Image (cartoon, rainbow, N blue to C red; front, side, top):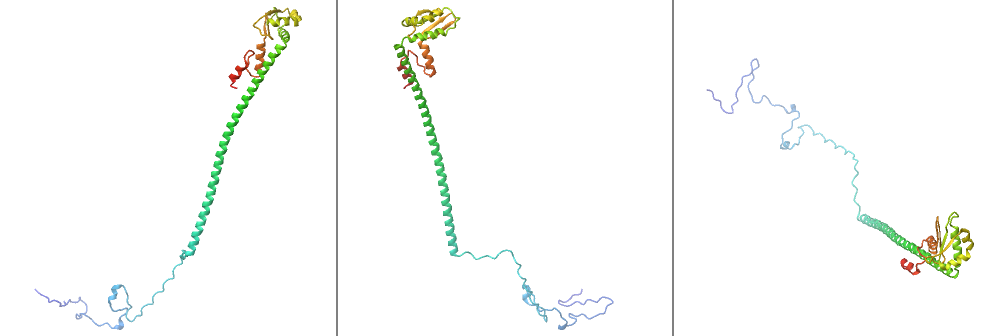
Length: 266
């Protein structure tokens, strides 16, 4: 068994066919002139700083490129204290002006709304007043007509008392209203008017062969003609009712005047 000492170089035989050269750690020294790009080792190599090789000057640093132009404007300096005070004062003035204008507009709107409300209320009051006035005028007109009709009835009554012979004309008109073909004519009238008609309308009674029939139910101033074809009512009550109906006043001939006023509430 062969043992080798430590740190002893082992001689390896050269390849066959080659020139056998003696084994040596360094074959030869390399002159400095044959070295290119050689630099001495220093600890700052680990810091990433490259050193120029010995005998070679370090290249000049490359010039920094010009900054690219940008579209963003450069920041301007802020406003001064005086400018801030001016802006604040302007904002206050603008706010006061806007508030004053808005206040005036609100006031005008409130005035218009109030005027509309007052106008509507006045219109309602005026309409109610007009309705009341119209009703009062209608009532006054009706009262005036009723008074006129009542007065007319009094005048007719007074006329019949002063001129009772007026019943003669009433009897003649009633007989003339009966058709000529009628027969068996009978003239009913108040007994107090019978003599007046017999004297004043004797010719008409004779020509139509009319029979006088006194009737106490017939008031003075009126009469009723009866025949086989019908009758003609010329009583004072019927004629007065027709006259009062023209004025739309339901005032009867025999009705007291005070009763009509009590019904009308006048």
